[in-house]
Length: 490
Image 1 (tube, rainbow, N blue to C red):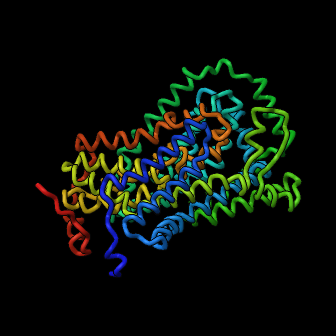
Image 2 (cartoon, rainbow, N blue to C red; image 1 turned 180 degrees about the vertical axis):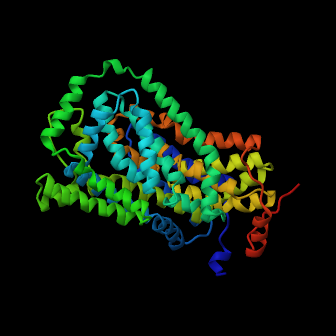
Image 3 (cartoon, rainbow, N blue to C red; image 1 turned 135 degrees about the vertical axis):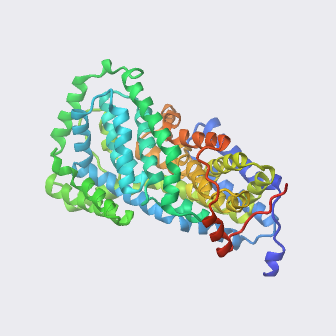
């Protein structure tokens, strides 16, 4: 241990809360007082405040900087997915893939069944792709267009899309977060997926019933204008060659996912296929196609309900989200390096002595980390590392913990607007929050599957249902591998 490390002090609870509370105050000032939904500068202030606290505790700036860039580096694959999805959105619109999905969706789906069917479609695609972001930016975007044609409020459609897309990300063996949770808690991937079904299945069924009932009751489908639907389909038919052939890029990505190919090359292959279709089927030039991939697609169909969803995409459209993600990750990395998050979690662990309390705390800690640090990866990795020894000491399987951090991490991520997941949803679905369309934030409570799952998880913890004790095999593996076990007081 170096002399510098000898001089580093761990923050107490009050000092650990200082950068978090001050950052939330600046964030609240920006969002609610100024009415400006750009959390970037408050998060930059958060990094600076955390750095000052770290210097007070004896850290050197290079060490704090290393912590910031360490977390950013871990999450770069997600940034790569953001860039690739931006390309896909622009190119798939130009190729006619997204317009074809909207066209056939308006022809085939009924307004009453739209929300329930949309959630199911997103969940199937997301399980296949292993990426909620890829599903939201492609199939989700097409569903937003169909919903607009039916006259359904954007926030209802967005809620159904998010429920389905992030359900798939939670249980797909191809998902990075689904692999991260068992990795940090020391459990088996497929045991982890099976243990999540008791919360995932009920939350999805409840959400499906709600969307079904809403489609037949709360949403006034009698007001659906078939003239407007006809105008949208006619405009799409005039602007694009509409044919089932145009769905080839989407089918290609799903086939590659089923073949268990890595997500980024699979998505990029879908972007290339879309570009080829744009050139040979829609008559776009090569340079135009490059422009669509970089700057997005632009068209004037003359139908105001559909133009905003078709005039979007490209790598540059993701830069607002990417910059927010990088700042949020940097803030989370600084908090972790300085020891603020660990100090808070240790206090929580020291106060909780029952399994129900520790399981609830693990879920809520992941939610809080998601809220403060803005990073779904950190919200899984940090509580997963900190709580695992406590579960071993209590004799409970860490499968309970891996489920808890998935529910509080993966599923809550899209519900926090300044989180990486929430920022992507708002950008990809064109909710226009930065433009003052704050009513579209109603997608948050309407994404039923995302918040019902952790609620059901807490109920199980309190009742002891679906809360497995550690098996003899698990205990033996802890002893053989030297896994840490917390010292619990009476």
